Image: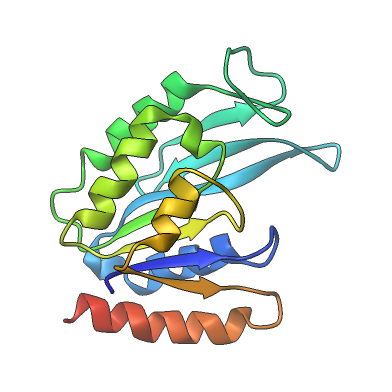
Length: 174
């Protein structure tokens, strides 16, 4: 097992844990991205991705124009694919990949669908948040023999951070 999947209900703390692990293991030059909600008037209206170099893009929003929709969100596949290209082309010296998250909106991208198995198959560990439910890539990734699945709840979040820190440290120092 060299890949870690973090799952749980929205708001359980998956992104928080991934951000913490990026800080804890920053000397391994993690490469990847963090997804955050775009909130307007107390309503979620979209999602932004930010890589660990500081670049960010809105890649799904209720007000975007586009052919691809996931739920109420229009997805800007060109912006997301361009973002993935820029993020993962800089990773020569990384020891760790970070993906937040493998979800339905991200899976609308063919580039993303190709990238995830490549990263999971690489020699470097992957830490990824993954949707609680889903078909296609989401269910395929969870069935892989080289992944360990950690479920996060608001109650176990702090304990899981400690546990995941130990697991990731062991993977990186192996």
